[in-house]
Length: 307
Image 1 (cartoon, one colour):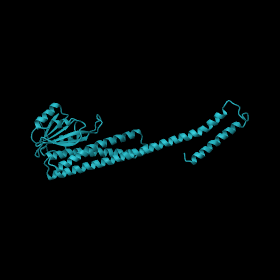
Image 2 (tube, rainbow, N blue to C red; image 1 turned 120 degrees about the vertical axis):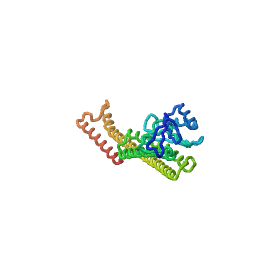
Image 3 (cartoon, rainbow, N blue to C red; image 1 turned 180 degrees about the vertical axis):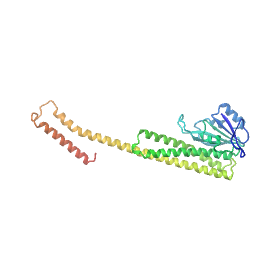
Image 4 (spheres, rainbow, N blue to C red; image 1 turned 90 degrees about the horizontal axis):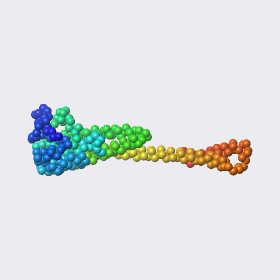
């Protein structure tokens, strides 16, 4: 689906146009082969690069071809159909247009389209920065949610079970996808600031630098949370191992203590003549012997700190 948006500084709202014009922002969702061909012919784009935008696992990068600059990035993706937590977004900066291509609806674009956040499509650099800032803000919110969840589970570390461990694995997966999207994106943002890929004014350069700082801080924060998860998992493994060792030790002690009366009972239960078998006090003597043996064993085990 191809939608054209247009707004100048003098306009009061973002307008949807039936066709493209100079200064337009064209947003494309899940393009078909016919729509790809239409975009290639209308904007003189590189068809091979546009085809890459249809790959759900496309990695962030920047390319320049036929007078346009192609910026591949990723944004937080909350649905669970794919084993990945980000989705690809292509931003194409042309001489007189801005084109965005996504496979799914981009929630971060909703404030732009609904008018709750003002965007001027004729100011291409500012529109580009607003788009990237919206994606960065979405990652920040996701990171805050993950950090809170991790610290909440960490506070109950002695109660962590298999379900909590599975959650930690999912947290780590989300953080890995986040850093995999942010690190290469920050690399080409630096190239945009230092290179001649689009016209940037002084205010735009400052905004780009702020954007790079925010992305770098996100990467550092995500790595810190990942380190916390790894520490919690290591501590959990140590706790579970200690519990297992304690359980095995307890069962071993019980086995030893139960072996003593079992052995004595087996000996006196044999179908052979036994000395003093007819003595009336023999049963009490056997029980006393078993009790003394068990007591001595308990003292020896306790002295060796088995329990």
